[in-house]
Amino acid sequence: MNSNRDSEYVDTIVIGGGQAGLAAGYHLAKQSVAFVILDAHRRIGDAWRTRWDSLRLFTPACFSRLPGMPLPASRWSFPTKDEMADYLEAYAERFELPVRTGIAVDRLERSNGRFVVTSGDARLEAENVVVATGAHQIPKLPAFASELDPRIVQLHSSEYRNPSQLQGGAVLLVGAGNSGAEIAVELAQGRHVILAGPKRGEIPVRHGTFPARLGFRAFRFFGHHVLKVDNPIGKKVGPKVLLKGPPLLRARSPELEEAGVERVPRVVGVSDGLPVLEDERVVDVANVIWCTGFRTDFGWIDLPVFGEHGQPLHWRGVVERQPGLYFLGLLFQYALSSDVLPGVGRDAKYIARHIASRHRSAAEAWERALATA
Image 1 (cartoon, rainbow, N blue to C red):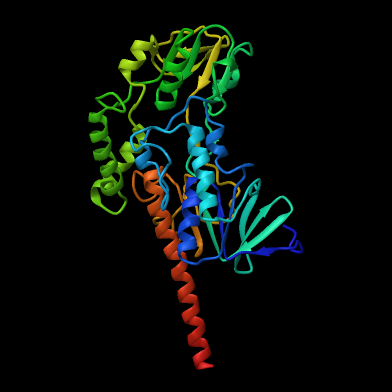
Image 2 (cartoon, rainbow, N blue to C red):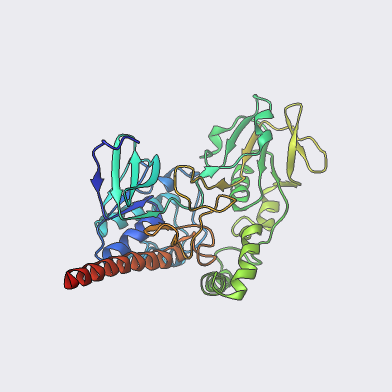
């Protein structure tokens, strides 16, 4: 890094302007901490706007709010992804959060006792940094994806918007989680759709019904108040739930069957340019959509704060070996709900209070130094 580059000092930098970063900003403002939020997108909420066109939230509006402001929708409705994006933008405006858009952070390191954040030619220094880039960053693809016949249209679910992106013919969706199931039902309205992957758990009632509301309340309570890292049940059950993934919610087995979606085992490779299933069948399709999830990427953080598998070493988002560094929005950061709207606000509040306590400790130490001078 060029140490002669002009720097801007900000007490606290929040990296990421999605729901985690905005929740952090709300609670930092409550604690009277000076901060700025850096977001790589052109506009607040663009992470939602760029999802597939028909996407709706899986959680009701009454459970999908950020601290201090409800979603402008009926309590038990499921807002669209654009309504969610507009809500985040309105949230930042209402609380006058200092969000700087279009700033992608290239590097985070420490120099002369301060954190240094660089983005292109910009250089910022801070006492505290909150990494709120979320748990889902980089699309995952199997190594054999590049071996598919080039005549097959292939997209990751993060690139899919609507059926017009695909060519005529059958579609194979690889990954039978909620994203794969939702897109499968949509595409099955006009073509043969194959959904590959092992069957997972699913809610026993139709999503959005009164019984589902009761079940959602129970699941939300369990994931928010019981499955936590600081109790024996959470330590034992939480990682197992994460490994299996969330149950199917809206597009369950009955909905998939009703739509005519064909279920097959998982895809394990490619033969002569075509996908091969676990049972050795070859699937001849014109399109493949990889609903294979995401991985985190913290390669831009040049600090010794990661474990052997690349995961941040923290307690409730606080990195003890690098005082002033925090993570927010991670999977199972404190509870099963930590990476989604119902849980991110609580974690943000905890981190904001921790930052404020550091300020108080520093001020008290300064006062003691002056008193003994």
